[in-house]
Length: 307
Image 1 (cartoon, one colour):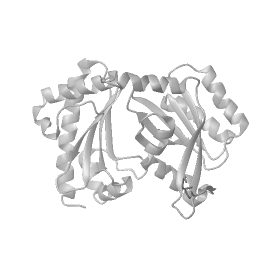
Image 2: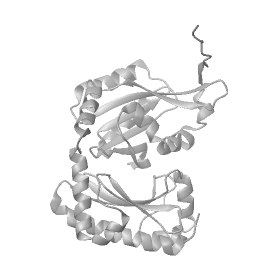
Image 3: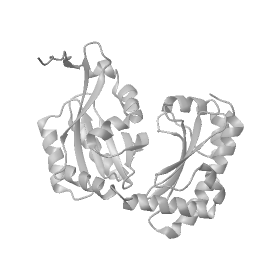
Image 4: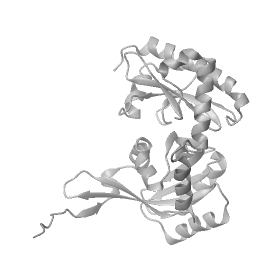
C-alpha cells in the first residue's frame, strides 16, 4: 500500500510582515537578492544602482542584463498599482534609456495591465514591459518567502529567451566571445594582470585585497567598462559599505569616487565607450589597469586588516 505523504499548506501573508517599508526595506532587500527576480523573469540581472536620480525623481533599481549589456529598470510597489507609478516609469524610461522595464506590485489594476499590454504592442524591440506580482508566503511557522509571478509580458518573450539560451549552449555567445577577446587583449597589453587569473568570458574580474574581506571588481560591458568595491561572496552590501564608510574622507579624496549609502556597490567609477569597437580596447584596458592599481593601493593603505 502506498504511503500518503503529509504535506504542509502554503499560505499567503501580508507583505508588510516581510518588508515593513517599501523604500527602506523592500528595495534594499531586492537589490541584494536580484537572483530571486531574475529567476522569475528568465534573464540574468546585475545591479547597476539603487535610488538612481532621474531629474527630480529617483528610480528604485537599475540593473543590467550581462548577456547583452541592456539596462533593466525596476520600479517597486508594495501596494496596488496606481497612475503615479505608471507615469514615473515612463519618465524613467526616457531618462535612463532602459530597454526592459519591470513593474513590481502587490496587485495590478486592470487598466494598468492593459497599459502594459498596450506598451508591448506599440513599441518595437528591444523594448519590453513586464508586470510582476509579488507575494509573501510561508508554510506553518516557516520563514516568510518571496514569490514573484509574471502577470504581463511581451508576446514572444519566452521564445526570445529560449533562443538566447540556445545560442549560448555548446559555444560562447557573441557577448561571451566579446568579453573573452577583451580580457585577452588586456592581458596581452598588461601581462602582470595574469596574477588575477586567465582571460575568460565573464563580465568581471575580481581582485581580492590582502587581509581584508573586500574585493575590487573590474568589469566590461558593451557600452562601458568600470570598477567598484564589494565584499567577498556572501557578504552584504551594507557590511562592505560600512567598512568603506569608516575611511570615507580619505578614500574619496584619493580615488575621486563617492561612497554612497544607497547606490549599489561602493566607490563605483566607469568609463563609457562603444566597447564593440576593438580599437577602443587599449584605452579601456589602460583605464581599468590604472584605476585598479590606484584602488588596490588606496584600500590596502587605509583598511589593511579590516574585517
